[in-house]
Length: 478
Image (cartoon, rainbow, N blue to C red; front, side, top):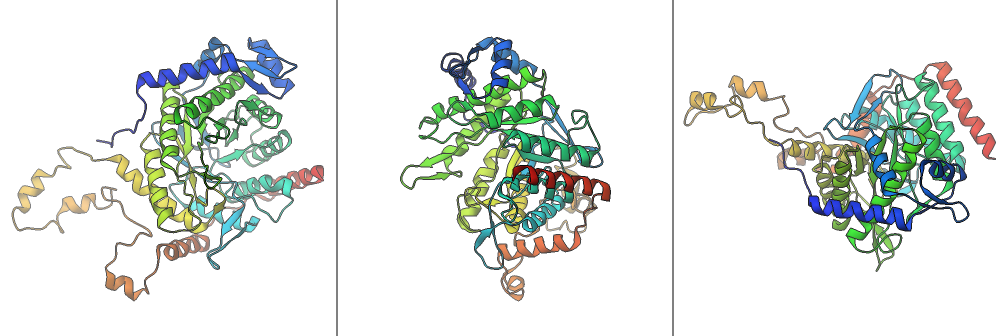
């Protein structure tokens, strides 16, 4: 028996949110700053004001688009093209956090600008961790040309892991270049056959698709690569301050991206994504780990399930600046609540400081927390064998179960979760090791992985071609 799914909205409330979102799209509409997208929408039956770049989406167009979205998305390993995982198969899959510009340096205890060598190390650790299924470049290296930071992050992933790539598109030229690199590494011209990556694109809240987001979305969809539509409204700033109002706006923005994707390519594989943010009016800062954010993410996942579309949300979110007690409770809260929604893709491993900073130690710790909450979600397995009446009768009163075959049989089955860095030792044993903190144990585990985990390098031809693509892009942006 699994732990019950977490919900915050009733079926009637889901319908109410859905209808309100349709009303916003059909009557208020969205700004779409792309002639290419405006023409596609006009031809599909949307109400398009080309002068104002305002689009109103008829209810029927939205609902027809939702019906054409596949219920599952299959992603492949980048080199072997073996199936990596399937979104929508009833399991939760994970992806690292990314886009951070700072690294929490374990040697100094302070944050500093992240370098490409740091990103490479983080990728190698992510490749080794069994709970991580897909890799978003874990950081934007600051020691490379500023307009090519995202590309160098992608380069680090493709060179140091076979796990599928998750990429956040920023403009058309960059997106095309990343797709070209993926084709080289996978030796697949048509990436729709074996998608080795997923691209994410975001409207600008409130209700605005900028050209540098919508044109790359259309290009990527047409290539057959799965896309994630992510809305990121900020309460009281770019979205209503009320939670229900923020949810309606977020849903409307995601639905608009789904419509455009389905017009560009019928039955395009699309993921419903969300990252709600709470704005602290007193401190003028964003908060990712507030209880309100958690409630919205649960509700957003319910909406995606309502539409029967693969969904993702941020999972581990902490506003703490360091690896401390606040970090622990916020990651456990956000991680557990997200996982209990039966989310398809869980993003956020490795980040802290409201996703501005990443660290090797945090990546190890988050992997451990994910294993804990995953075990909790699994619940109890009740069968004639597991209720163990026969062995209980055999051992009887005052006996013990240490040498029983039943105990040995279940010892390594996952019946009991086994920690890697969590401390289950006695005080005396811990003292003999000079009282290592969780952060130190995580650091040691990270260094062990970097010493022992070997990733097969790309063959020389692929590496040369990939390097050529990066250098060409850098030359073009100068």
